[in-house]
Length: 61
Length: 223
Image (cartoon, rainbow over all chains, first blue to last red; front, side, top):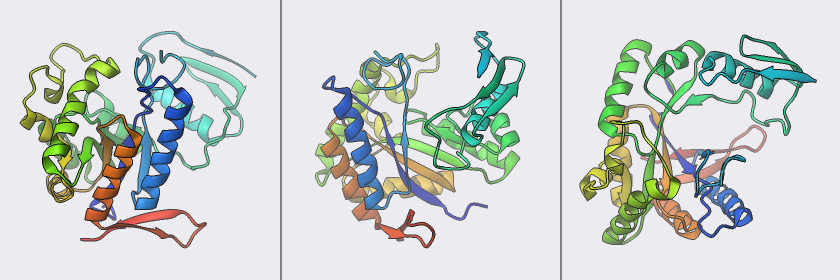
């Protein structure tokens, strides 16, 4: 049996609307750190392959 | 070091996961599998978290069985239809009992409920096009349908003013039982995302607290 009923976390894409990968990555880290300070239990970061919009691995455009 | 990976497109996920978990845990890995063979391979940077938890972002096919066999968690993605998810979780619990489960939901919170709904729904509608997501025939989530009504999106998201968002989270708890709720900000603006998360955290009574071991942060929820 789990020791909790519901825990809150954040789920983050590294979305890159301004085509600025450095800033997109930095903002994602800042949001995760801010969420931790707010009391969220964990931060999940998505990696999307072949996405035209979110930074993932090398196959991202 | 040296190694070889089969290029077969449907190589066994059991073997791939076993290799990945050993790479995360061992300073140097020797692996002689059917599809993967490696001699003295290592990955860097090393993961700080040990063991690294494994979650499968799928509730269909062989994922539930694979998760049960190896103690992995199961995760529902932001667009997964809640009705289907609830049925699958209930079925899995009837077989396996309690298991690690997480569900991600599109999320937007604003003091103004109507503004939150307009912004959140607009972002969800734009998401499939921006991300270039593709689904197999017949597998398109209802919230991503081109003509998806606002109600279909809101029923599968956490969007509204702070009280509405917390009420929606509690409704998920009632429906799904023990789980991790992962809020995926439905905005590309990081400042708006952080503001929305802060509003939710305040309404939910979240507070950060130092744990007694190593200064790691833990979180708890009031009420």
